[in-house]
Each structure stands twice: as C-alpha cells, then as structure tokens.
Length: 213
Image (cartoon, rainbow, N blue to C red; front, side):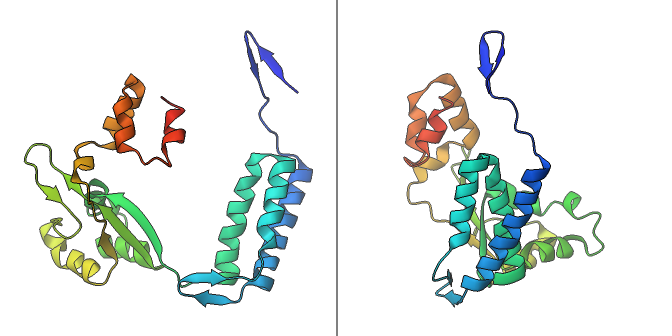
C-alpha cells in the first residue's frame, strides 16, 4: 500500500513479523541441510555440487517476501561455509596501496596482546589473501606496487614474508594512464556531470555508477 507525503509517494518500510522470523529459521535450516546433501568435494579450487536447490528456494522467497530476504541467503551461505563446506579455497580481498599502508599502523593492534603479529595472524588465518592495486604519485610520477611498497622499517621482513608466501600479491596495471585518477576524482566527475568519468570505470559497472550521474 502506497503512502503519500506531500508531493511524494513512498513505500512504507518493511516490518519483520513473527511469521517472517519463523520462515527465516526454516529457510536457514533447509539451506544448510541441502548444502550438506549436495556438496561433494572441491576440484580445481571450485566446490562441486551436482545440484543447488537452496539458491532456488532463496530466490523464490525473495520474490514472495521482498529483496530483504537476500540477507537470509547471505546468512545461509555463511552458515553452510562454517558448518558444511569448510572450504580450503582462498579468500581474495582487493585493496589499494593506501589501505595496505594503513594495515601496518600501530593504532589497529594496540589493544591486542600480540600486537601487529596477532593482527595479521587473525587476518590471514582463513587462507585470506590481499591483492594490491598499484598507485602512481602525481607529484613525482613514481608507481608503487605491492612488490615495491616500502613497509615500516620494523615490519620490513614481515612484509617480505607475506609477499614470498603469496599472502600479499600485486595486481598488474597494463594501462598506467588509469592510475592518474582516484575513486574520489571519479566521484567528483560524476557529481559534476563530466562524461570523462566513463573512461575510468569498467563498462560493466557504468550503469550502476550512472544512476548517480
């Protein structure tokens, strides 16, 4: 049912009823059970399942109950991963040189008994890997990659260990011209209506970004 507010017509915020909570609980139990029944093994870093009815149920509930039920699908995937799949697949995370540098700052590990070592131990304990996108200095023209990044002096050997064991990896940048703009620069182009932003955004992502154009 639509609700009018002045000249605007809006949809009321969805409310979570007891019945929805019950459906959510049944779905999660069913999803995890179906994952257990269908999962076979991993092959070439891909989980092999002859069928995946859990996704079909999830999409059906999203149609019946609304898009918010997508959160239930996410919860189901996480639970299945913990309880059933227990995968050995790597979990890659893409980040910038700036964020990589941020990870070495003491403020993020000052409350941990093991300090920086414990902080990175927690980060990498689930076969997670960091894939680092390069950065080019506008002032000097220097390009910094995961391989040339200079970690703090007291963490230099630790960072080298991460590189040599594939825990931190560099992402190639064939077109270094794309490094002249940051995400903030592209955002400003979009907000200003400058069509040049499309030169820096992959074609697949442009429709989503254009909604703010």
